[in-house]
Length: 272
Image 1 (cartoon, rainbow, N blue to C red):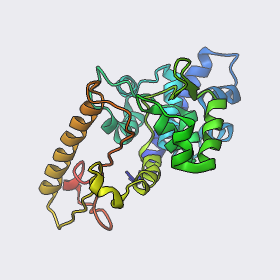
Image 2 (image 1 turned 180 degrees about the vertical axis):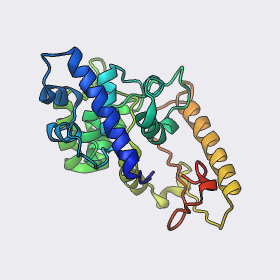
Image 3 (image 1 turned 90 degrees about the horizontal axis):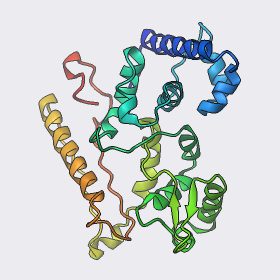
Image 4 (image 1 turned 90 degrees about the vertical axis):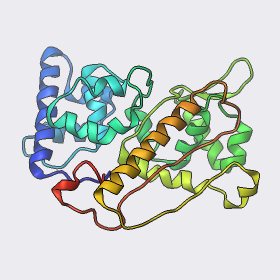
């Protein structure tokens, strides 16, 4: 979602974050701002700018999430979103609440380090393979992404984000369930779409539809409801142990307005 916040909204988010950070530092007097930045996985320059009253630029959603997650000592997205209020809560809910399907059973967590690592799309795809229930192998990574894939795999293993199974040697992501902010997800979706193989339609594994039409706000709302229901069903199926196997499979569901998004207030909450 590429929603532009007003200046007052930006300042409100930053002001809330400043107050939260100041309160945390007050209860941890030996902790410096640089140390807090390092522990929360946020660049020290970003933290210093945030603490300046004149700072007006909007922090990236995953940066806000990383800081709040560290300050509140909660990594689980579904729980974290219930612990914040005000402009920060509004921003995080807009960017992350659609990733939570079932608050009681969802195990998705965010990691500032993974968000940084996934700026490299090959590293992201390698990690996605290792995050499957069956894991992956060096041979599979090499076949899919060549020597560059192996290089990224080694880097992830050196950072202990991917580890080898001591029994069969398969490679598994340490954090199987993870989430990224929508801006990064948008960038990474291109990598997944590039994996679609139209020549393999006859193999019976893939599917591709592209539909477009002029719609009313009510029509768009109903389309989104259908898509959300489909996502929930696919999510449940992928987590059904009786349906899981060794074929690395992905599904990508996306819809949006072509061209500029209408700004009519009546559409709020419908088109995004």
